[in-house]
Image (cartoon, rainbow, N blue to C red; front, side, top):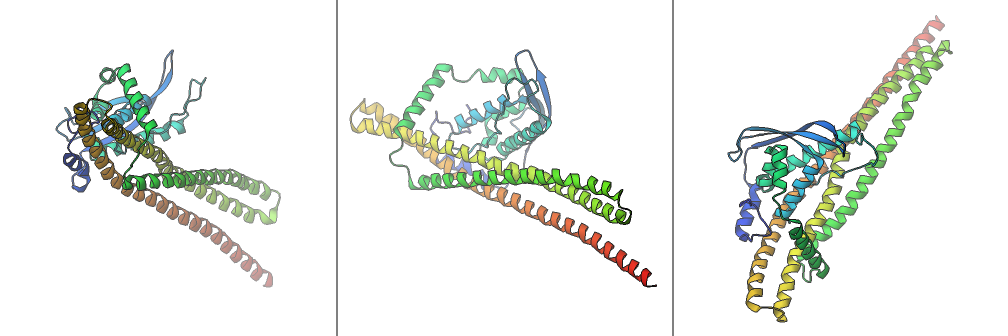
Length: 387
């Protein structure tokens, strides 16, 4: 087990946990660079899947080399996310993109989908690399460095099926009991998450609808340029005018396409990532409550003398440390996450606003230039007629 990690199976002192979490207060140079690229499709007799190349460059002493190159598939990323949640139950783990599966199709993912997923997986790994605690997780290091057979062997070293089932049963039992006295700060945190989830989901739906309407507008506008070119062939007196209109429409189409690209690459991914973050946050709160509920149940058992008092007292002491560690980890990570969220969303909307301003200025300048040239042409023609 990574001795620098908080594990629910091993109580850690609250002071050391705070020191471990708040690395973001220290100024340090980035020493881990990760790139996800070069997706490849693999077809077997059983399944079809995509792997991605992961290149890691680092100057950290705990790595055996300064550069690594491995290939990973989506389920490997899922495994990493699960291990991080297991070892760090109340840290905010970056979300993975959803897994879309269309049954019965051999070529399940088109190029756009693969590229969108590649970018999301790249962001997932780099957010972990930039996290003050997750970046030093041993499973993360193995994910970045181990060859496929080594990673497969490492996965098998986890708890067995019966052990995992036992943990699941205990977690379900704790969640069924619920938390009687959730601290006020976590009540406020939970309320924030609920409101944030509602708002970010609404923004996501509106953004998707705007993109769809923009796409429909673009597809329709593309048809008008050729229509005006054809029209000019039958109107000798309006040839230049109609061709000028067609040229303006073509320029506006290109500007619209660029704006749609900005919307799909800048705003939509950020908004949707935080939709997934809102789901992750609910999971974090649930795991925190499960740890506290387990403590509450032991305290209740001791109060009503439902077991060995000495054993219960010892278990309560360990669980109190565990709850305090979990709470400290979440509180420290919560402030860090909120700051990143505010910066990410502000930056995305600011960039999109600037893109929109540039788009409208460009389209306006295109039509003003055309109208000015037409006005000058008519004035010139009027002067010739008077002469």
